[in-house]
Image (cartoon, rainbow, N blue to C red; front, side):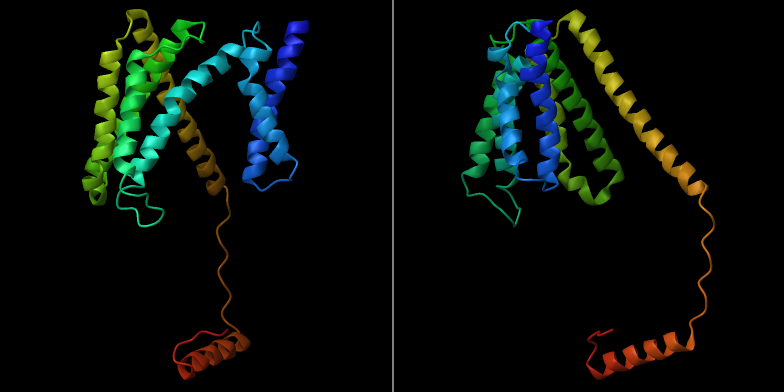
Length: 246
């Protein structure tokens, strides 16, 4: 009981406060959340050290590994995107090669690195395989969608094709255990099916809501006051060279 209480105070309560504080900061909440949110995040990150005996810390250990792989990948993609033809916030000329180097480093970590601080190696292997399979699937879907159904974006569809090919290649290089591979297919299919059902449900709710709405009332004809005001506005715009002053 004491171990569960310690984990609740040093991991789960800070995690909830961090999520709630992040939403408050996005919505420009109170100044207290500027202190509470970083402190809560720090407690969550330090959970493998503060509550090492709790099974819940495996999720935080997994997040450590995700950060090691995800930070160079995210920074590299940002540098590559904002080092191109973006007119606002463009990075210097070194942005693209540096970003490409960071992405390559992240890809190398995905293929060859297994964090020693993650006790359950199977958990890490499944995470990597699911991430690569989901990336390949979503990238391939977006490529087909843009290539065949969005004519104006056909010339811009190559990054999605590159993402699908790269993720598939990394999946092959990483190697997939037979037992994990079956679970990954089930998990990815479940994610897509669940997302599709949620989207259909939201569309169904909107359809039912709009179906039950009454027919809009006809607008009454303009009154003499409305016509006089419109005529005055038109005359003023004509007199002032098109400037609108209601």
